[in-house]
Amino acid sequence: MPAQRPSVVVTRRLPEPVETRMKELFNVELRDDDTPMTREDLAAAMARADVLVPTITDRIDAGLIAQAGEKLRLIANYGAGFDHIDVATARSRGILVSNTPGVTTEDTADMAMALILAVTRRIPEGLALVQSGEWAGWAPTALMGGRIAGRRLGILGMGRIGSAVARRARVFGMQVHYHNRRRVRPELEEELDATWWESLDQMIARMDVISVNCPHTPSTYHLLNARRLKLLKPSAVVVNTSRGEVIDENALTRGLRAGEIAGAGLDVYEHGKEINPRLRELPNVVLLPHMGSATVEGRLEMGEKVIINIKTFADGHRPPDQVVPSML
Image (tube, rainbow, N blue to C red):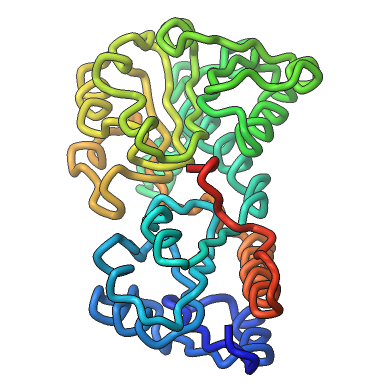
């Protein structure tokens, strides 16, 4: 890195306090509008910057990295996920990648519980009825949902967010089960009163609610595929606040339409903002626009982490949140 302030290109509008602090510390280029950069814009930015600050809307693949200039030495991602960045190719070019882990744990776990409640208690249906002006008043059998206390919650991915979801679920009286590539520490299992299932198939077949909290990697792509979705009980609910690619969205849609799955709450989608239109038509589905980390506090903390990663790297040290091969 050069001795002077690093040149930083930010690909999206960030919260104003974050942008202000970046202007104080770096030679930073900020976006005037809040639209994603085109591929050509990204290539140009990577050709002239010391540091690129992308978001999940920017796909930094091998082709783009091949066009990076000699100056580019750090991709400081604004967000915890990094599956949109070809980390291996970046490393082979001597470009480090950092992210912002842990910042949105509580926010995303809150959203997972909100979706569980929204689907099981049919909250969007009630909201739509009142807003339509057609609500005729209380009735004994109207909009009956289900009680979540006593239900079995199966968590896919017992990392930071999965553990936070488990803590919330216990307070609501749910039974916590989980599948993870490695069993968590015994003391954490005891704290969460959680049951580990080595077999994902066996766990899925017995759960009332499935919460997807694992990252998107080659091994988790379509982890909930058509075969596994058919293992679900017809009364089961699926919630995803992680990555859309973990679920076969078409298969999920078919199961919901056929009554083989009771409901779903989704904050992420397999093809980004291109949602299966049949999925949008279903009354037993709650769809949100990737709001899991959308709190003022969370987005500011994400920015602070990005700044720390850049500043630490500019000072000649390893970024504290560097993405390493063992994470891939």
